[in-house]
Image: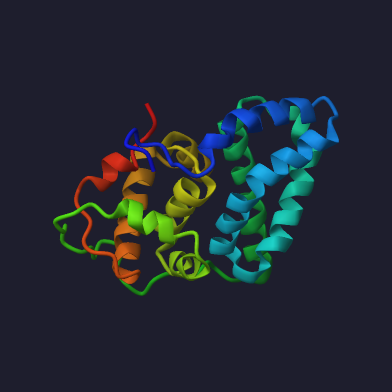
Amino acid sequence: MGHGGEPRRGQAYDGELGAAVARAQEGDEIAFATAYRLVQPGLLGYLRGLVGDDAEDVASDAWLEIARDLGRFKGDGAGFRGWTATIARHRALDHLRRQKVRPRSSALEQDVLDLPGPHSTHDQALELISTELALELVSGLPRDQAEAVLLRVVVGLDGPTAARVLGKRPGAVRTAAHRGLKRLAKQLGVPGVTDEGPRTLGESK
């Protein structure tokens, strides 16, 4: 994650993604495959945090809708990430309603947080979130924290876009992501996190 507050993951490819989406909207199947390759890893990680082992099935349903409605999309690469995440989230919630289950949540109260430590370790925690173990830990967070962390870190959305996906204020998403990362840092054995976290996870300028 860069010092400017933007998630590293995904954003480096947003220029390529935007160009691929534009070509795909003109019927270029190879360009659609490129867009899929750039978006799918983060989208699948997000869905794993919501529906666990059913993530690939839900992702398939989401991509069918994405392909069907591609012509309606307007925006750049970052916007496409947000749009696809919104569709995937709706399909995941539909799936959970059908299964009559909820995403797993932590038994810990949301406001029980560690005291700040001497060093900011968000970047260390973020690097570890790409592992399967970390995704399991994310799914154990309270739902608002889990979704905020997944959208900001795994999908690579900025604060305002993640907030639109979740239908919440950017500040609420930033706080939830910060709290989730603090809890993950503890679970992953990373030293304490300072109050620099919210600024690191803040909305892009």
